Structures are given as structure tokens and as C-alpha cells.
Amino acid sequence: VRFSAITSSPRVIALLPEGLREEMCVPMIKSMVEDSAWRVRYTMADQLVPISNVLNSKTLRDEILPAFVSFLKDCDSEVRTIAAERTYALTKRLVNATEDIEGVVDVVEIVVRDVLPVLKELVTDSCKFVRVALASNVVSLAPEIGEENTSEHLLDMVLILLKDEDSQVRLNVIASLDSLSFVMGVRNLSNVLLPAIVGLAENRNWRIRLAVIEHIPLLARQLGRHVFDDEMHLTALCLTWLGDCVWSVREASIINLKSLTDLYGEDWAQSAVVPEIIDLFKSSSNYLYRMTSLNAIGSLSEVLSKDIVEREFLPLVSDFACNDPIPNVRFCAARTLSSLVQYIGEERRKSDVVPVLEKMTSNEEKDIDVVNFAEAALEKLII
Image (cartoon, rainbow, N blue to C red; front, side):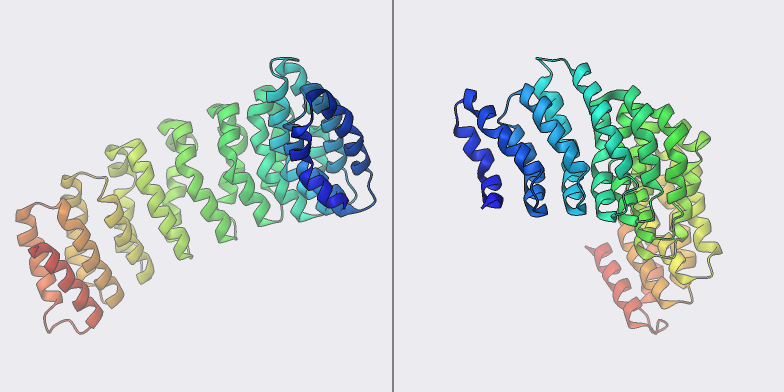
């Protein structure tokens, strides 16, 4: 009964006259905080945000916030977990509700004084689900509490969570880093946080490496080319992912390099990326990495000039890849040629592409998959 009553309480409270809402609601919240059943406490912690939406700012500050802090300290891990998941939403509601009445600074001081010390304890909570939930929320608090409080109180928590033994905790922090960089600024982020992120880039868990790669374009935009390249040497790190042992990581690294080329321009790609992709093909004894090089060529050709495609990429694909001893590399080469033709002039198509594809469809080619991909590429040329 208590469980159902809590679930429906936000709608019921909203129907009451404003003068009666606090009078009816506050005693219920206080009793539920101390309820003996963890499921009741869990449900109340879950419903604090919708309940707070129909109460005034004074009640929110004086009654809802202390109840929320109690749930963060609850003896049951499920209650602490749901409270941690609601941390950002309730803090934002508190700041927004009191902005015009009490002043943001006063409310932020209350959050820093009453909430952050409890969160600091939770970053090392024995239950990993509490830490996972907290990791999704704690970074997002940065815009609400400001740069000074973030640097003084929040950053240490973030660094601890980035080193957590559970991979999902680290993933959740990485996914929220844009909030932190927005508040702290590029210089502070690069000095304090990026070394930890770079360390995660070489983590044994491939999902961690994948998450880092997916957030590199965001960091690149915020850092700028000088910091990204000259100070943090992140371009070299991005290129090492092309040789990762996991296919998903290699493919994500290609998408990442394409995004960086869009951001930093063709000159950057020509000097920093193109030579490395070509060298990856020529120096790799493992055919999988040669295929990765070809996939990168196909992707980057979409954002590079016709001159670079014809001068740098076409000779590698037509002269080397199409004659590779491994059939998988040859049909990948045929597929890459098929995607390159739209960026190659008519003269080079006739002199460099058509003869190679015709050879790959002749009796000299024994692998049926190579023949099929080459025929598909030829048909595209004819069309």
C-alpha cells in the first residue's frame, strides 16, 4: 500500500491547493525516509524529483534535500543506487527552483556543504552499482556548481572514478566528460584530466578503448589543434588504434580520423594521417591490418581532395592491394576502388582502375569473392 501511495503521490499532490501541499507532503516524506522496508525507501528516493516539481523552493531546500541526503547514506545498496541515479536531476531542480528567490550562490553552497561530502564517500562504495550510477551523474553536476567548486570538490571524485576497477564506472564517466570540459576550460582539462583519459586509451578492456575513441572528436574541438597535436600528442595515439587487436576498435579509429580531418582540415591529414595509413599497409605482415588501411582509405577519401586520392591512395590500392597474396585483401581492394572512382578523374579511371579490375575478373583470379567484388566495381564504372 505504501509503495503504491508513493508512486501516485506526485499526481495527487499536484491536485492539492498550494497551501496544503507542504502540510500534507512533508510528514509523509519524513516517515518514508525512516521506513523499515527498503523497497518503500527505494520508491520514495525514486519519486523525489517528480514530488519536488510540485513543491515550493523552501520545502525543496529544507525538506526534500535532507531526505535525499539520507537516501544517499541509506544502509541498503539499492536505495543508495537509485539516489545516486537521481543526483543530477534533483540538484538541477534545486538550483532552478530557487534561482529567483534565494539566489544560486546560496543554493550551490548548500549542495557543496551537504551533498558533495556524501558523494565523495560513494565514489568508493563497496557496491559497484552505486558507483556506476554515481559515475553517470557526478560529472554532470559541474555546470550546476560552477568552475571553482568543480575544481575543488568534484575533480578528485572524477579522477577516482576514472580509475575504478569496474569498466562500466569508467565508461559512464567518459560519456559525461563534455560537461566537465565545458565548465573547467581547455587548459585545466588538458593539465589535470587528459592524462587519466590517455591512460584509459590503452586499457585492457576494449570497450574502454572504444569509449575513449568515440569521445576524441569532442575533446579535439575543445582543445584545438595546437594542444591536441603539439602538447598532448593525441594524433599519435589515434593512429595506434588502427593497429588494435579488436576489429570494433580499428573501425572506430577510422571514423575518428575522418572526424578529425573534418575538424582540422586536409593539410593536417596529409601530413599526419595519410603517410601513416600508407605505411600501415606496406609494413603490416598481418592481412587484417592491411584491410584496415584500405578501409581507412575508403573513408578518408570522402573528406580529402581529388588530388590526394589520386596521388597518394590510388597507386597503393591498384598496384599493391589488388595484387596482395591474401584474397581477403584483394576483394577489399576491389571494394575500395569501387568507392574511390567517384573521386578519380576519367583519365585515371581508364589508365589505372579499369585494367586492374579487368585482371581481377579474368581467369587469372582464382577466388570467386574477389571476382564478384571486382565485377561489381566494373559495373559501377560503366554505369
